[in-house]
Length: 457
Image (cartoon, rainbow, N blue to C red):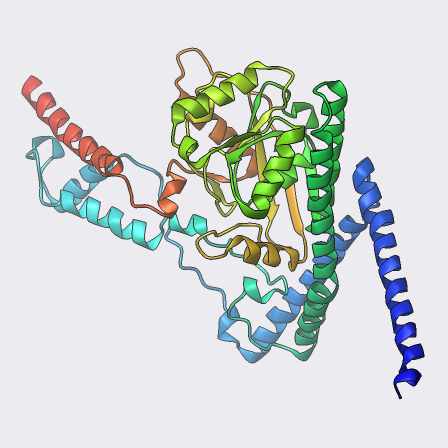
């Protein structure tokens, strides 16, 4: 019995060997080699167009099925507050006083009980339509993309749609996920090995040349591990040596998206584990800026390291995400002023993801890194546009905060994002007392100003 199974076992081993050979040959020919030379066969863009056709068909089926069955889930509804034209605190309080009293506002006392309604209304509006909290949850889709994660209220609508969803599940987890995991390990493995080897070379042009080529090749392989379809605009504005590249931050893969089109010096905290191994190997081949945990809070030390880097025009541009946390790609929040105090040329970059193919936002308070990467690699694709904006410099009389806000506004305008003044740190912390004090100062200033105007008259 045992001897009779030996030929069968040999046949299985031969078939497995042939399968793995074919698998890696296809990877080498269609993915790895094109990544080395920076070329594309257009397969991913054809795949994207096909997905769009399927999504359109699925959306029509959902609408038709919901209409036939009078499904309550798909009835149009809106819970948004009607937008009003922005007005100042003084103007709104004037309106409240005039609507609640027959007296003229100018003859009113310094304080009226009706003023309380302004602050109460603003508080209720903030609760109902919070500008900050909703920036840290997944962006809502107008149509379903055949991922249950993008519609937690999914119910059976039609047999065809359910079969299509099941087929998509099989393709994503049975074919795309193993392919992407293989590519990810290939890209990261090559990055660690080749940068470690290049680190043994003496400093010079040859080392810098090889380091740039290796980084580009490995990041392009990692981009293909996400089936990322990226459109770069205005490449003539790409960051140059001795400058600082700043971009809005949605996900850890923002680094891969940008680094697959150009080389950057990374800035970050030193980690342990696999991330630490990658950091140590990368810094051997390229002058990245890694800080110890105790050094990160030392603003002067961080600024000194950054200044020393940008003063050397032979070094790569620094890549920084001034928001300091991930936002769901619907807005841009407050930029930390540190990177704008150095005085170097700033190269703004706007990144906008298309959520129809996969949600790139990393909600770090909800998903760990491994879970997040699994969700990315089991999505349909990562589709995004990158705009390189013209370089910007600090103007005369402009402080670091004003410069940061000007750059942020340019990024928001180009990417079609909402420009918010709120600090992304509110994701994990409470509102600072300074924000409350600012409203109190505005109100007291209005009262004092009213009193002064009355005394003059």
